[in-house]
Length: 248
Image (cartoon, rainbow, N blue to C red; front, side):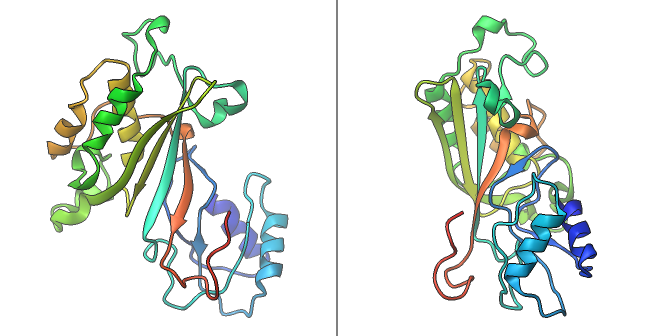
């Protein structure tokens, strides 16, 4: 996404560093990604939006463009980010590209196909332990956050505000909803992988508490990227000028 947007901006003479609200792994979707950049040109937001949509692939849609204060930064100014992880047992064909499809012999080779029944209550109990402020090293993927712990013990500390599990009515789908002030690398995919492991009865709900006590990177099941979607990024009131930011 970032490369396609940068190429589109370059075609209209803008060569700028792009700052994004949330870094996402390959395959992850986004309904509400926010991107900021500096430009010396006097840009008309309506014309900029039209140009971006004309010059990018159909999978990338610019919903709006706005001028913001010089102090604004898409990532640093954000208060919270909300993700939804979709699991299907299996999902309807129309949602397969947006969901983790179970059975999954790669992730759970020990299970027979008939054993893929998710215990939503156990998943909720497990995820409840992750709510609040914790050091999420035990749910991190090795990378910049874990490397920075040597200089700053708070590098992997985040506050998880929401960790809910919602079962769809009339469809074999489960939605895992996560909202936090920030996420360490692959944290949502690891939370989802651990929750599904618990939901399948392969670990007790206490697994999440055990992971939070660890100071070594996560080694359990990592949910695939294509089941994850960034759905909302929240900013302080007044960030977008007069009135609230339009609903996406």
